[in-house]
Image 1 (cartoon, rainbow, N blue to C red):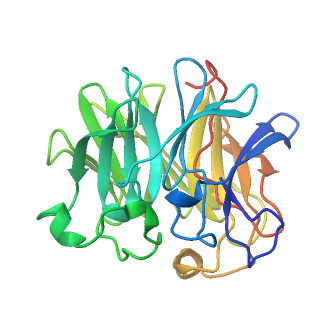
Image 2: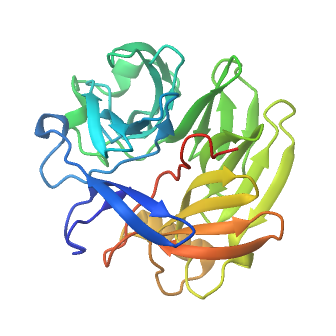
Length: 316
């Protein structure tokens, strides 16, 4: 997640990994981190831990906007960090069998396949034309402000392999599409999508207004739909819905507190206004279709959640 360390709205966000005891509903440990100055546009630039994934050895494959980290969750220790000049607005990381990773770079409309050392072995640009022609004169995207390349045409949020296919969830076109089989796509037109996690044989998506959609990745048929606006107790705006985990019949969803940016204005238009609610994890009982609890995970200035991960072996 991203957190303003002292809780002051004027502060830039900084990466923070928080461990939660979901049964007690409390944060029990945290790791705070600073991106290397050489990998950031400026000291005041926002930094966040974005959508992580678990590795077979139990470590976290954790991206920041311009770095990729390997984190030991038992010791809450960063074991390794790699970076590359093409890392810009990295929103998610998914592990590859050989120790490499698949990254989404929202800022440059790209999906990168990287080797274990962080070298780029495949670059999938989602727009038409030549990548270099779209960004003349930039040789290190890490030094470019996160908002400088907006507006985006695709804004890829999450990518992963399902069998032999490489899929990517795109914010602007509101779909999840196959890179390896162009034309094969999962439309998500009700609202802007995030995530795209394979759990229990289904692909699970969040949509920013609080919708959850689960899809069969073979038939592309919808298997489940939930709307947290109908289930969540309390008034006010739900928040920016992003981050999902499934543990048996327990569904955990991240709700980021709305920032003073376009994100807040988009949701105010969609939901009709109301007081801002805190950054939190919402637990849903899928069998009963009810919200069980909401766990605050931010501070007075809110907090941005990108992923929710269960311990090794717990997820579906």
